[in-house]
Amino acid sequence: MSFEDFELLTQMAGGAGARGAATGDGVFTAEENVAMARLSALAADPHPWTQRLLATAVAASGYPGRAVVGDAAFRLTEQLLASPLDLARNRMVYALATTEPATPAVASLLEAAARRTGDPAIQLAALRSQLAVQLGDAAGAQGVANAAALVNGLIADADGPDAGVVVRQFLRSLPETPEATAAAGDRRPE
Image (cartoon, rainbow, N blue to C red; front, side, top):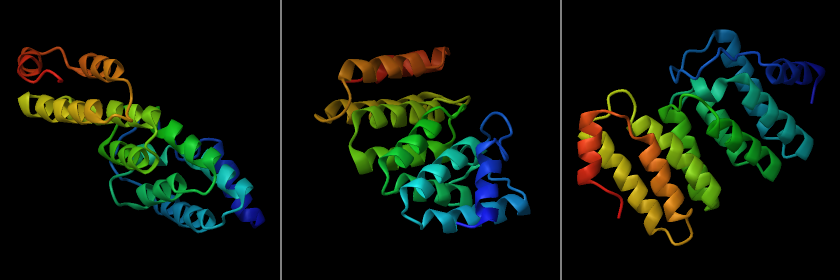
């Protein structure tokens, strides 16, 4: 790792790139795109210290919360979620799980991490972000029906999180609108 790489990691770990709440807009400056390309090249280094530094830097950068599915920030986060180091993967999962508000890219990344690991805690974090996306501002009957299908899938998974926790998360996530309440009455988790 070069001095410039270490300097970049230090800047990212200090929050360079973070702009408050997650936007999921995929808008990055040319400088940020260059930084992500350098970080992505560094992610190919399997050394534990490199992986740990990268995960810390990317998590603090705010890039995952601004990503859209398939862009450079999304792919960089995917690389780190596939890290050979548990500590790096867990740092990224935590960063994604605490991203507010959840975005479609964050939900997609957490869903992939949950599938890859089968870890009930990661499945629950993925569910939280998926529910936030499905039941967002424009949640109507279709959003609630999609969310109920997600919940039913997790409840049916014998190796998944506790069914009671899943149902409570679903009920807490429902927007308090007459349409959502009516739709939830029609689509109660089994």
